[in-house]
Image (cartoon, rainbow, N blue to C red; front, top):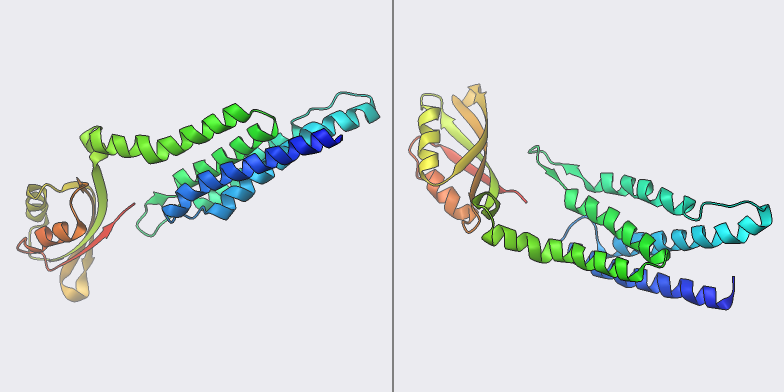
Length: 231
């Protein structure tokens, strides 16, 4: 490799570093599993492997006197980052799946790194801007001005109800408080002569958990209330 080619590779690596920082900051500020250091390593490593893959194909093609795929090594990056993405996806105890956006960001950071390594600077920067805009601008706008279903937040509610109380009547009263019940799980607690009711509900995004707790606690027949706000 000539000195100019080394300079070009260094520029690509530095640009991928900047892109990794920008993408990582968005996840870091939201306290997500994917942090700043991870996105930097993904972007820079993807860029490096792409540069090596392209340059090596030309260097060794002359030696072996046959054409080589310049992106053979880079092609393995996409499948490789799948392991990182799978590690970011979590199934919590309440059966809620989280981390899908983080997994997508991992894949996107690798894609941007590959694009920079292949010399597609404008395309890489554009992709980065679109990714950040989607997470920081478009998604909040949809939640504010989109359909009502997008302007709601999800909560998990656990109720303790005496066994002699009509659970169906409790649900009817809950709905009167503008609480949309999405799913229900009921379990008997024999030792306490009560039933435990786990429900996933949707409420307006401007309602605080404390307000929902107060509304539920005021319903006659509900012995105790436990609320968890879901991401």
